[in-house]
Length: 601
Image 1: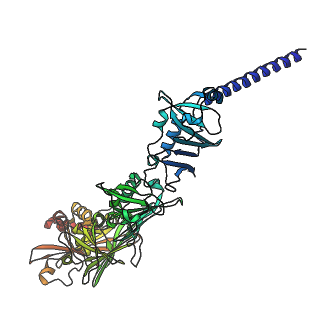
Image 2: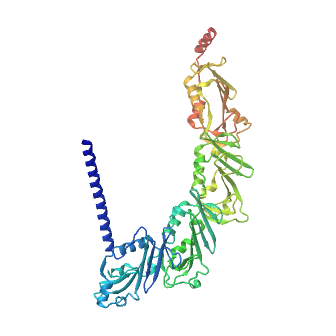
Image 3: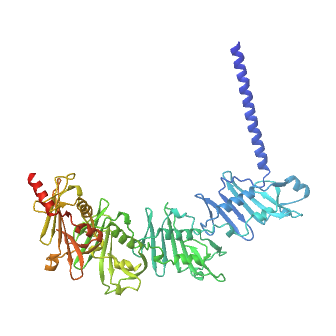
């Protein structure tokens, strides 16, 4: 029994809910229908696809094609979607006034001609998914507050506010889209400028823009984006009313210039042709879209964009390589070549000799080239001679690659400028700053001033020769005391020796002088020579020998590492440490005691 009551109550609840749902739904539908019936023009804004307006002043027929509103005349002309939507919305918002039925007309003895509807003053047609609805627009009422309108297929005449005449555009051109192109800048992948001086073609490859004609060059992305922004925001100033069939009148039979813009999604390109200056409109010019009817007027600024010089798009940087990734620099001139290479974050010179290079000096040279800007491009000149050649590369290679430039003789360039010829081109670049031309070609300029390095705690023998006198120190290992050779008189000066090791093991030159050190010293130089040899223990036993001599002619001291031709000078405090006597002299009594002690040992 209880089960039956539960089912009965459930049935009642469901039935009541269903009644409420369907009643409310019907009520809402009825209210919506009643509201729709009170509108003068019924239109679905989201699904409308045609609008026709026929007035004494103009006629316009606009249809939605592929998501865009297009005009029938000029054929294919784009209409402003926002204006069409606004127009339809305002038409939908007009309320319907009084209805005059056929019975009312018979009672009053009226015909359609009495309302101006036999030959209407205007026709309005709107099409959506429900079909095409056409409305005849007749005379205003006696108070001129409303218009008589009749929908095609309806027997009634309705009254609509004269606001309708304010809603309809004054001319067909008011509805035309005034944009030159509807493409967003990021949807454009190429464009061309056709003008008297030749064709300029630009193309986007990946994230970079490149000039394909004239020549093939990397483009300045910022300059291209600025140009694209200007052309995509440019507007049509006004439209030439009527059919502009005589293109010669507007200078469009043979356009002065043309802009072609190609989108990346395969849509039809924009082909804007520019004619002669517009009469009576200073700073404006006639234009048209190639292959389409209709002439319009654009700002003279559009012509300026069409005539843009190729240099305004070119990447004016001399160094288009990423400097941080350059691992090889080759500088060559007649009879010599220098190669610098980077390995494990350290630079070294591999020719004409193998030596550590100064990272700071090379970085400074790269920064100078990186700062270089192309001021102008000149045609190749006969007789222009190369001073030297520079090659920059991201890879280590024996051949040229990357970027290669011939630096031309300074006499061939304008004062304060440098002329470069990129190898493989027929151009000469006039470049600033001019200090690019003074890139050092002497290997000395790139060598590190670190001229001698070894582990001080691996030194177990030191030989010091001054003229004909030689002193030798030795020790068994780093934590043992230094001892003099048997024939020496005195005691090792541990402080002087340690200071000598400290300076020599990390020896840094004050100035690098020449790659070709002295061969045979003169007798005067030989007499002043200091030769210090450090004997190293460990797995790779070797000697490191430093030669220092004085040139009596200028009273300067010069140094070199034995086995290397690099000649350099030393800082004064370094010289003082190397020339300090490492021997503590003994008195005669101390000398006898030392000898006795040595014999006892």
